[in-house]
Length: 93
Image (cartoon, rainbow, N blue to C red):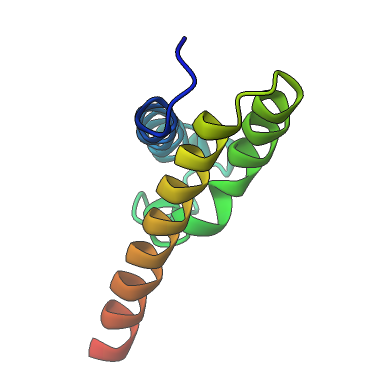
């Protein structure tokens, strides 16, 4: 794996996609169906730090600073988009 910002962005997008799929399918199963399938998507920005932090620590220890920078850029962008969309949905009700 190359140490580049683009690699970090790709890693962040891949992790975000897998995290979203995992949340959509596992959360309703674990909660016994009491949670809407939309709930994980609404709070995706907060939950993403559960996998971004360990990835960033591993990349930092392996001295792949550019890749970690791309990961943080992706995480910040996705968090901001999620906050914006969640705010728009909440204000529309």
